[in-house]
Amino acid sequence: RAESEKKLSLGAEFCLAAACAELGLPIPPEYKSGETGKPAFSVSPPYFSLTHCDEFALCAVAHCELGLDAEPADRKVSPGVLRRLLAPGEICPSPIWKWVEKESYVKLTGRGLSQGLSSFTTSGELVCSPSGDKLAYLTKLELFGLCISIATKAPLVSTETELLTPEKLSGLLPER
Image 1 (cartoon, rainbow, N blue to C red):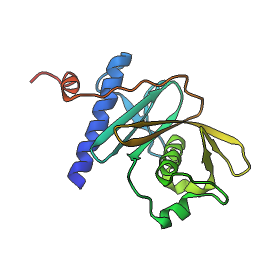
Image 2 (image 1 turned 180 degrees about the horizontal axis):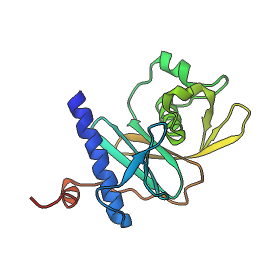
Image 3 (image 1 turned 30 degrees about the horizontal axis):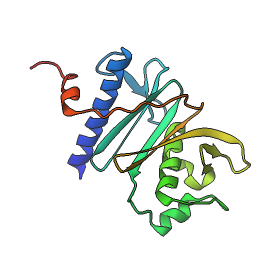
Image 4 (image 1 turned 120 degrees about the vertical axis):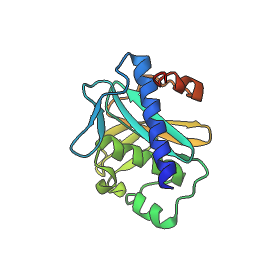
């Protein structure tokens, strides 16, 4: 498992390098970790977020701060996790979608799971505080059997997705 996690993390780094190449940013990407460990470019915007699950590695880049999460659409969420996930009175039509929505938001904030997933609600395209204040916007995609959620501080105007093939990624590697 540790070896596959390392490979997926490297895959996410390659996705980030590909995004940097498209944006004219340095390769390898120059970034640092903030106080909470959340990575960020040395100079922002743009901002980025990485995630991986199963055999997929993903990267999202945007003009505003963001958090990204993805899980297979058929992944089950245990009843115990679901209880810790939901705020009082929060509706949950799909546990896996609720999970990626909440995970993307805690990645946006940089506080991770220490924030407590039941300390806020998600509904439609919004993340809200218990009092109903808007905290963030959600953009959701379903691609290749994955539920993908991107939480941002400002609404995304558009999304563009690209599947990176090994051939395209190999173009980012130095010649041997």
